[in-house]
Structure formats: structure tokens, C-alpha cells
Amino acid sequence: MKVSSIQLAISDRSKDENVKHALHTLDGVPDSDLILLPEIWPSGYFSFDRYQAESEPVDGPTVNAFSQKAVERGCHILMGSLVENDGGRIYNTALLLDPEGKTIARYRKIHLFGYQSDERKILTPGRDVVVVDTPWGPSGFSTCYDLRFPELFRLMVDRGAKFFIIPSAWPMARLDAWRLFNRARAHENLAYLISCNCAGYNAGIQYAGHSMVVDPLGKVVAEGGENEEVVTAEIDPGLVDSVRAEFSFLDNRVFR
Image (cartoon, rainbow, N blue to C red; front, top):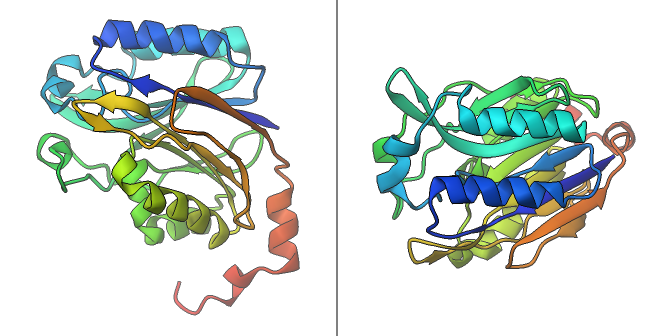
């Protein structure tokens, strides 16, 4: 299985310019089974003053454009996340599209960030743990700050997750924590973790980049740098089952 994360360089461009740039970049991604984009890339995560005006429903023009790309490319696309408008409430929502362009997973970010961020003031938190069946195995979803909450990942494992798929807008100031949590959440759950982080600057804040693919033993299979790039890796979906069969410390948990 081949996965590719589009580590977009976010800037203070208009939403239309960001969408055009992302679509153009996607056209250059090598053939992949799964392509990922980062968190709130259409507006820029730190552009809080744009959230309400640039929000859209999950059947809006941005999603429709990427649905067409999923069909053209014949692959799954994690759209990253965008600001979803549902009846006037807005959410940080990640969507997974299948090769037919259908939305097969919608995850609304549960843990909203409050430290030096207006996300918690503006958005409505999600409530649902999301795990869906995919051709490569059951996959669970989280977004950025969720990485700091291991109980969410255990809930996904209890629902069968063997893969974690994570869009993010993690800042450079906390790069060490980002790299730690990517590896920890994968290894402590004996699952693959595939993340896509932003690069570049937005509202004067630098993103960390370093999108990662981590295997169930916590080994980094692929990792990006600080700039815009496509991070691609070949992975073996069967490794999760073989690792869990050999030494499944998950079976020794006392508290469930």
C-alpha cells in the first residue's frame, strides 16, 4: 500500500487560491492508495477571523472539487479538515473520500485547542469516535491536538482500529512533542499512524511540517522536513496483525 501526505505550505492567501494550489499539488502526487491533506488548510488554521465566513457544508464546493479528484485518481483522499457549517454551528471536520468520490468518514475534532488559540471559542467540539472500514483495514481519525489524549486512541482501538489517520496544523514551537506523540500513539496501540501536518507560515506563526508515517512498532517509515513537500511511503497493512499476534500487550490491559 502506498500513502502520500501533501505537506502544504500554508500562507495568508485567499481560500480560492489555497484550494487551487492544493488541487494543483495533488495532480503531481505519485499514484497512491491514500492521499492526505493537513488541518484547515483552505483558510489557514490560525486565520480565526476567517472561519465563519469561509465555512461550508460537507457537500460544498471544496468537498465537491476533491470528490472529483478522488474519482480521477482512483484513490482515497483524506481532505484534511475544513471549517464545516452545519445549521449555523461550525466544526473542525475531517473527511475521507473513497475512489468513487463518496464521503465514507466524517470526523469532527473532539479536543479543541485553547492555548494561544481561538479555536475553542469559535468552534463546536465533536462528540463521536470515528472508525471506518477501508480496503487496508479499520481506520480511526483524529486531528492535531487530539494527539495529546491517548484515551481517544484506545477507544478507537477498542472499535477495531489498526490505522490512525491524522491531519494537523502543529506549530514549530512544539515540534519535539509532535514527533514524540506520533510515535507513541502508534506504538502504544500497535497500529500504523499516518499524519499530514502543515508547513509554512500563517498569521505570523510557523508550522512544524514533519508529516510522518509510523509503523506499529513505533518505527518512523517516512518523515517530511520543514517545507512544502509530498511525503510518500510504502507500507504493509498486514504488519499490524503480525505484530499484535507476536506480542499483543493490548491483551494484558487491566482497565478497559
